[in-house]
Length: 257
Image 1 (tube, rainbow, N blue to C red):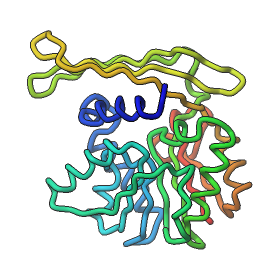
Image 2 (cartoon, one colour):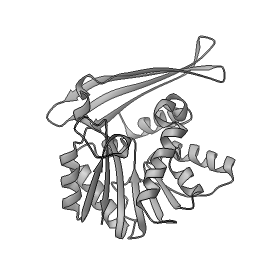
Image 3 (tube, one colour):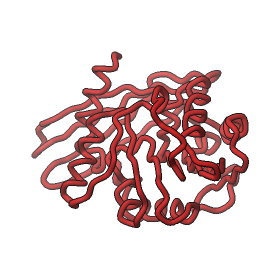
C-alpha cells in the first residue's frame, strides 16, 4: 500500500475517529490521562504531543495552561484538530511531520507524550524504535520527560486480536471491524485491516478500509531503548496508574532525561 493511498484512507477515517473509538477515548478516560500527565511535569511546560491525532490530549492540556505542539504524520488528523480548535477559539502550533524523519526539533521541550499505541504503529520495527527514542531524546531539555503509553502484549494474544463495534450517532450507524491479516511471531508484529462502514437507515453512505502494521513492544524492550537512548530515570505504571503488574493491560512509561 503506497503512502498516498494510506494517507487518503486515513483522511476518510479522521472525520469520525472520535466517534467509533469513543469507548476508549471518552472524556472520563482522557481526563484521567491528562491528570496523570499534568502530575508528572511542571506547570506551563512546553509539550510535544507525538501522534496527536485529533487533539484528544492536546486540547485539554492547552486549556490547563500548557504550551502544546501537536505533531502528526497524517494531514487529515491535523485538519480535524484544527477544526476543533477553531470551534473552541483556540490556537496551537501543529506540525505535519513524521517523528522518524523530523530533524527540525531542537532541545526545546519540557516533555513529550505519545499515547494510545501510537508508538507501536510509529515504531513498527527495532530500527524505527531506536530512531524514535533518539529523536525524542534530542528534542527534550535536560530534565525533560517522555511519557509513553502502549498496551501490554503479555496481557492478551496479539495473534488472535480482533475488534468489532457499532455506534449510533446523529441518525448514522458506524460499524467498525478490525481483523488480523498476518502475525509475525519473531518480529512481534501484526498486519491488520480496519474497516469502517457508515450507514443511514441501513444504507451504506461511506466506507473506509485501511491496513496498518503494529509492533507489540514489551516492557523490557522499551526499558532497554530508554536506557540506550540516555534517559537517566524510568518509572513504569500499569492499570489505574498504579505499579505495573504482569497482568496489567496498560504499560505507561515516564522517562526523565
